[in-house]
Amino acid sequence: MSTPTSSRTRRDWFVDACVFLSALVMGLFMYLDRLDDPTVPGWLLVVDQITGALGCVALWWRRRWPVALSLAFIPVSAYSELVAGAQAAALFTVAIYRPVRVTLAIGLLSLVSVPVYTLVRPDPGVPPFFVVLLGLVVTIAVVGWGLFIRHRRQLVLSLRERAVRAETEARLRAEHAQHLAREEIAREMHDVLGHRLSLLSVHAGALEYRPDAPAEEIARAAKVIRESAHQALQDLREVIGVLRAPVGELPQPTLADVHDLVTESVRAGTPVTLDVARADGVPANAGRTAYRIVQEGLTNARKHAVGAEVAVAVRGAPGEGVTVEIRNAAPVTMTDRATTPHGSGQGLIGLAERVSLSGGRLEHHPTTDGGFVLSAWLPWPA
Image (cartoon, rainbow, N blue to C red; front, top):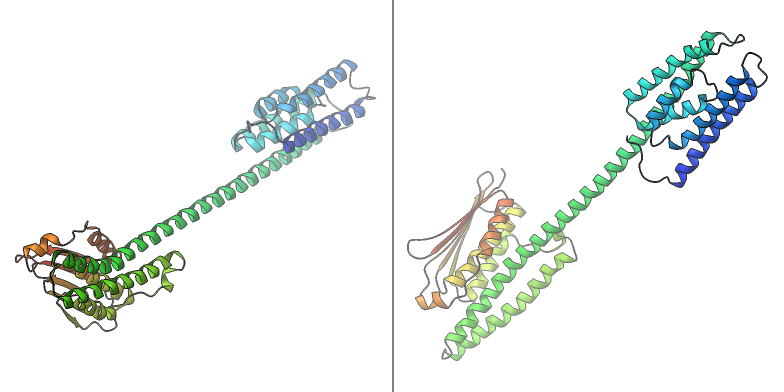
């Protein structure tokens, strides 16, 4: 623990004043006790008074130079009795602010000066052994009290640092949770709205490039656009609900909802065949991820292979995992390929992250006939 270098606080001024007054009172008490002692020469008493007064004044700098003051008091204490209080205060400060080995070294030097004092100023009424024993007890008490305060302060400082560190870690965890929640919102918005908006884009493009289409076909496309726009608004409200409620409270799709997803795509004009085998009892997380994979595959098929046939296959069993495959043929015409909207590829990137977090694998590649395959494997514990 280093010596404080900042300006004194009110508490520091109060403590320093109490230490100064205590050393001064102790010196005055010993002076009055020696005033009528015929064994003490007058000149020695005067020198002792001056030394004791200077020692008390020097205590105002005990926080800055505790070791220097203690070392200066040791030879002085060999002849001065009135500096004992100032010496004890300086040793106490060393025990608080300096390492233990420094404190013990100065304490031993202080004990060495006690026998010298008994030789320089012998007292006929007090045995030398008693003076040495008293000096030992006082030194041990001062050093022990100072070390106790030192370790107590270190403990308090350590607890404060732990509290600050815990608060920082809690803030970082909260920020990480917010980051994960935002990523979850982004994925949900892409998966849900991308599916709906692709329907809008395909049918709106058909109306734009085929203005001479039959009235029934135009009406059917307009109906799909209207229904998809309405459903997109509903999905958007559910996704934004993540900002107001925990994700677990929101309705989440399951593997059973894949049938509705395929039916919706068929109604929009995409020929889709669905094959779901041995997938009963799939875990909720795997089922939800499988749903998102199928959703992304159908969305990409509508964007890049308008009118092409799409085959969706889902299989799984406990211990073997869940396998999902979406395979679409090549676009019906090159015109359809050119007029379909192109994505940024962020959907497959986000889907790969989702599958990776679930402990699975995601693969996608074009086929030799111009089509595309999106496949994934998800774990299903036995």
